[in-house]
Length: 94
Image (cartoon, rainbow, N blue to C red; front, side):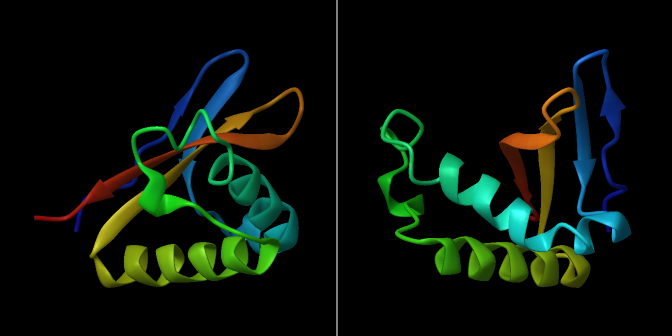
């Protein structure tokens, strides 16, 4: 299993799913939905498109389970000032 990434700057934080993220699960799903429903973001990865908030919740649940099973390693890029996820890093295990 790969060790989780943790990187922090003045404005951004890169981190895996954390225990405190459970309290903000719905907000995190909304943030993911906004990323994976954006036309510009999906220009080259249209198969990642989410169609509603429930898709965001399912995506997040699946990624958390896959992370703990060692299938992939999803990390979030969080804007610390706005306290929302602005990007995703998904490392896929060989």
